[in-house]
Image 1 (spheres, helix red, strand yellow):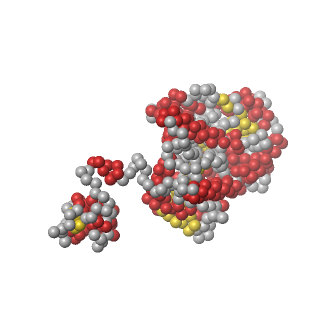
Image 2 (tube, helix red, strand yellow):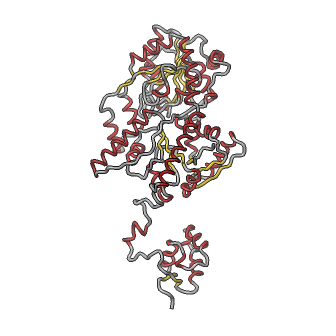
Image 3 (cartoon, helix red, strand yellow):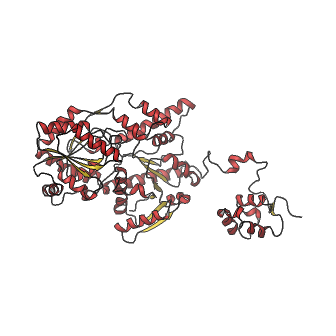
Amino acid sequence: MALPLTLLLAPQAYRLDPQRPLGRESAGAGFLEAYLRFGGNRRHHLVVADRSHGDWFHQEACRHQREPETVLAGLDDWGAAAGATGAIALPGPGLDEWAWKRMPWGDGGFSLVGLVHTLCSRPVQWGLGQFSTAPVRPWDALICTSSAARQVVEGFLERQETWLSERIGATRFERPQLPVIPLGVHPEAWTPPGGKTAAQAQARQQLGLASDAVVVLLAGRLDVLTKFHPGPLLRALADLQRHELPKLQLLIYGEAPNAGMADLWRNGVQQAAPTLPVHWVAGRQLELAGPVRWAADLFVSLADNPQETFGITPLEAMAAELPCLVSDWDGYRDTVTATEGDRVPTQLVEGLGQEEATGLLNETLSYDLAVGRVAQGVAVDPAVLRAKLLRLLSNPERLRQLGENSRERVRQHFSWEVVIGQWRELLLELEARRHAAQQSDQTGAAAAPPWLPSCSTGFGAFASTVLRADQALHWSRPEAAAVASARLREALDGWDQALVQQFISSDNLQPDQLPARLKGWLLKQGLATTHPPD
């Protein structure tokens, strides 16, 4: 069965830049491949801002399908494209904005499907605050990639609804569906070739790692502001290497967002763990994404940042048969259990982030600095971290079993084929809700948003007179149509190609049969009149 879905296609949301690899883009690229492989669609409905975006998509589709068909619509006609399938996928959480844009088509023709990525930026938090008053309907959905993300979204909606109740006495609110559907990976892309033992030996030789080393892998964006603070991990590893685990080594695979952050990381590693053997592999070397995971014994990711909502790097490690030690934070809580590794408790103090929230509100504090400052107040328990590292790394057989469990968990719950199945179930549910609303006359008619009406409605008070749409108009003189045609070729009016096309397509029509803007222009030019000619 084809996935009943139109894509709002922005290539940057579905294409990974090897020079600046980001988790969100990696997830988008994975979703697009999954849509093409498992969605069941051969005819693809796309909304594009530029036709070249459709050409790019078609090239991607041809990599996975024979003779795919792409149907393109521009942004002016996006609602019709969404109505062709019944739902449109938005590459972000902005249901409020797109619900207003849907109004001219009526809200019952199709569903909006948004997706949570980062929730803590000012624009996203502002948008969530508008859900309660925007025309978002129960047959729309905001996919939450983790249970923690859903709790956060519900908190935003509850606070705004409470405020509206207290402020204006509002009593009725509608929410979109908030399903928890994770991001996914393509497990086969990470499977150790020839088995874990053989792949590990070959990868270590390729990367210059000793065959008997105990290797911990840290992979992802190297940014203390928006990802995690590595200090506690570095100090714990250095201490373990000095005392209990002399063969312990750290493998770092990633990219910093800029040269300054790269220097900070290198200096920080040297200062926090000066004697720990550390191997650096550039994240832009995408061909080494598999080998660095196959070479390692344990993957560690200690997210401590509110910008993280899911975290795809643990899934990539698990698919590569690598056990994980992660912070007990956001989506990590959904992906890594004691069967695949372990989690380290996190703590924060009530009141954390109030100053940063005010800075974001006033736009006096940058997003990166705001979340970085907040993350400084989030603790990953250092004593528990050291103890769990030692327990895991001291038991190779246990690590091997955890790795096998990890690969199986990803296959069963986080492979893109499984995740696309959850998307299909959601879309069918939204379709049923929408049809039920249509049958019970609960959908809204096509209309302009009340805050962005036509000029005659919003600014009619500016004019001396507002003519009725059925007001009779007449040519002011026999040659008026020819004069109009000539003037539309002159500089003062020929720039308005939309008006020119309206006139051409309305050839031989009487003035009162023309569109409103063309009627007004003819009156402006003195070529039409409300009075019949003598």
